[in-house]
Amino acid sequence: MFSESVNPNTITPTSFRVTSGGTPIAGVYLFSNLNQTITFIPDNPLPPVATVNVSISTVADVVGNTMVLPFTSSFQTQSAIDNVRPSVVRPSPSSFTFQPDPPTNKQVPLNFKPMIAFDERINPSMGNSLTFILAVFQVAAVMLSHPGVVRYQ
Image (cartoon, rainbow, N blue to C red):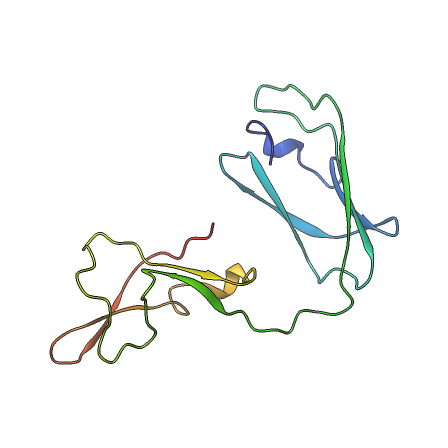
């Protein structure tokens, strides 16, 4: 995360380098938080048991001021791809139930925004209005899907 909004045109494979063993890792940059957060998403899974280096330099803010000092960091990848399924660790409201029969949450405010936290990161392309459904049960037991947007924090 940068201290201020950056000019997206200054984020390039040269100014924001991700490498392993000296070889660049191909990927795309995702901008968020008014261009203060840049997330690198690799095109392929990272290599197993490898040191991944990240170096950022010559990035400029929206008025053209460049970074004073370059940033470098590295991390070690694990030995295998994570094949463990995510689990829900914190639903909100806390008594939130899955496929309630009958519903256990009563007197929930009409403007309530349900939240579900998982025990690990989930793939953003998998979390959408088709995979997360808020259902409203009526007296006649007809399920109505509530349209909404899936947001990530």
